[in-house]
Image (cartoon, rainbow, N blue to C red; front, side, top):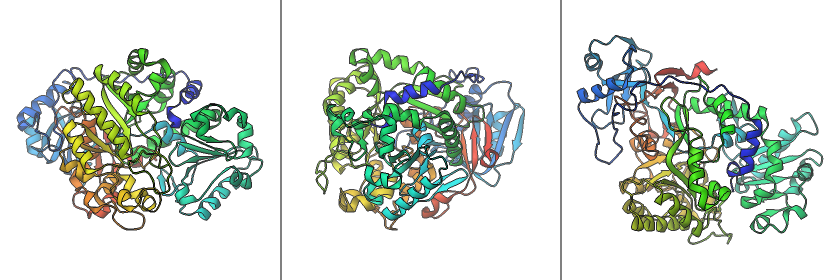
Length: 621
């Protein structure tokens, strides 16, 4: 059970929401009806890779007729389009691209239409706007708004939370964080603890830090909490209140102050009133927007959203603000909705939730129609994924949805025409998911279903081949082997399994579309860093984990642009630079194809272009 998935989380946000002034953006006349240019994705046949004149015609049809065209001249433009892979100029009218090519070609293409030339990018490299295929905005906002003490550095706008790599280092940092809070009754909340780095933790340890101040430690996975005695007392959690609740009680320890997965249900409602304050949420969301922009992100998605119209007001105020230069998109939750209303009412409730923010031209916030998030096994960072051969220390993984629940819910949504995004981390979990997809395709074949295998931590070569045969695609978190292979090789998995986590090269070799995501706060929402992870797989110890699973720079950059858009079924609008598409660009100060691959993550980002408007990073302060 993830904190952000709990109904009480939604209720807490509802209480914080205030009346908003919905931002009404201009609709580009005929933008969707004009037959936008269809971009191709890697290793699939081009669907509309026509000649320049055909592309320009479509782009001009999509653009507002009375808008002056701006021609941006760049040192290099990387389009992610096979027929026109690089260019020196791109013409933008309103929020749409109308032409791409050499400067002379672009001028000729737009004919008599008025234009201006902008040389801001003359010495820079322009790429399609970076996409984080999967992250959690509220979790990212809240975790990064408290005391961050994690196994890795977190570099945020205006601050750096340095890593704590040992038990002694972690406890010293936690003690320092406690000492910096002046008011004795104020809570200390910290996120980032992971026992493989930071040693054991329980109520007694936290009581030793303070026997009067309430303390809550949030596990790096976001699936676990630890409390001291004053915190349990403040929340009204007693030993009796944690007993007799079946699996929830089994996944909690009042004596140790430890609650995980289903056990979060026993503490979540009172604790959310402490965690989600108006000031913390507002600060966290604004910090997250600045952070995403600093990393060149122009669009992201949260699969498994449990949101209401009241909650949407909070998002509209910050994520939908005029100066927020990115799309925030969402996919409905195929676990929480049936849990809340029952299977017989789930389809209607899902449609109702999507209607909160329909996929409409001009909106920054939207639910994707006809797409649903399902869950298989537990969190990788807690080593709760379901593994065929178990764990070296004998502990057991966990199901988020049992195999029977996966079967029932997948059939319900599949037969109703929904496209599936399925969270899965272990190879046993993946086997259950692939068996399910095989049954869905046998019973009710769906062309171009693009079921997305999400996270894709552990797998076998045979399973990768099955993914290809079943027509599924993969959105992987390339941070897993970089961040966790060293520790997981020593604890839990062993080196043979830990090093081949995220078999990205096997995926692309089988012709499977591959995108990358951060799952923020599970990994940094930094697309160039994610690409660097996929290309290098260098762990903190300096070694390469699974060198045979490294991908090329081009494959990694496609995974944060066109392939991410393809996984959302948005390749006609986003992910490449082509006439008719939305003018979302990420602007770099160096060419990522020209630098040494091991420095890919260090390529400076100048800023972004969002819907045709320039947003330099420096302008955000």
